[in-house]
Length: 105
Image (cartoon, rainbow, N blue to C red; front, side, top):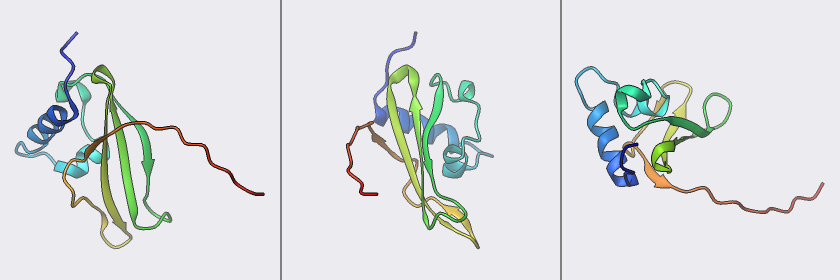
């Protein structure tokens, strides 16, 4: 088993991988257009996603780097005429938090 990396170290490796010639950068990472074996960080699962056609302009995807127990959330803005733009880089480390809500029906 490889050593566990921090969120910052994972983001540095993700950026280095996607900034190679011919890669599609933030968009490829956000949409999962990569082979996790090529990335070299173990299993990567998308655990949360929001946005796209019919869901407004907010867009995000959260990836779980299972071997490191690190979650990275990449955010963007969706528009019907341009697709999704990623202006904030490859994301930031987040963590799962459970919340209890009350709704009235």
